Image (cartoon, rainbow, N blue to C red; front, side, top):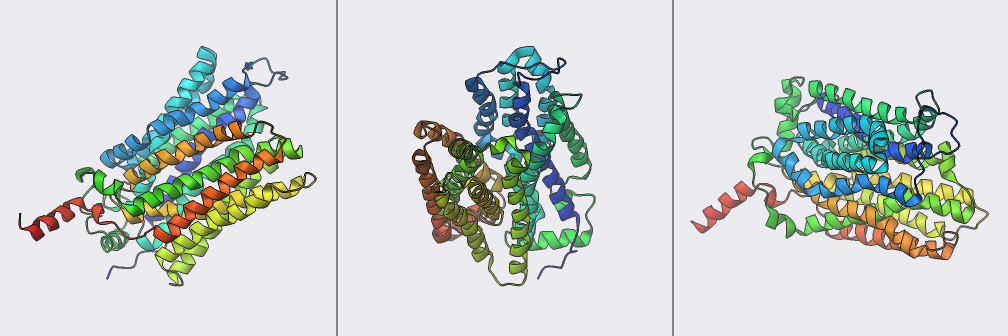
Length: 463
């Protein structure tokens, strides 16, 4: 029987630090999507900051360059995290990303769009370890009973950062410092965060100088009850069981679920604004308040789901397995249900389309209490590797999705062509969650402790 820890402790401080790290990282990731509008504004009257005459093709190339570096480093990023630890790799992701961000305006002056593409590629390359490092840290800091709430707290930072940069970018771009200030602010925040993380961030409770013995014993005993090697052996000393991972049904279910989620989520975020603009003649991207609505709903509802899930688990209304599958169903099948009428909304009801989009994106956040936690549950020791592999496939989905839209939707004002895209989203969400509910698992897999597994095999065979 493990001890009872403090209700608020250093584990929550670590989660808040990771939250702010994600916030800053996504400010760095999303800043260009807003800044590029000011960079290409031919009507600007401010001669102090250059404007660039880029084509739409060049603009798309600049905006996608981040993701090519990001996807290339996904699996290696998981392995590097396993080798060097979550603290160092998270520091590297946010800190180096901040330096690159600050240098972006100078890069534009030095080498035009080609240099910006190179910088964004490097930024994506560096930030590929964001998710693997966070899963590694949570696996060592979050007691099983608190994983849902701490995971949600950490990953809510990505939505909060997006809302912040979208809210302030317009003000920064029109200030006396011009559009470069968007990069200076988001990059500077990354460097400041890096110093705070160096001082207060901890790889594990055992390596933290801030934690009390009572809280450390609480965390370690709770983790040991699930995985014997969780605190005694560092993942760097464990050989990655590649064959066991790639022949594991729960892993492949998680992989498909993550890919299905990304397909629907990123089409919603990147393409539906275009659908509403062209079909309903309502440009929601020109309205800062409406543009931020889906992200704000995602953040608020994510925190609500977090509290609800934790209450249900603490009062033992739901088991961990039931909780993960119920919240994952909410995150994928309710947006699926909202997407179907979105393709049939009357052209005079643009407000209804915006409401459905906001509802779909907002409720997607329930996934933070669903499959997002599953990496740690399947394998605390190899959560970074699992996350790197699945995020590789999921990132490809977020890249391929807009390309498919470009092929299918040849006339952006034709709602019938858009319905085909909506049908792919419905199919993706339905199949992804169906597999997770029927075949997914929340049990620690035998290959989480390969040394122990091999020792048992030797003992049984007498070799």
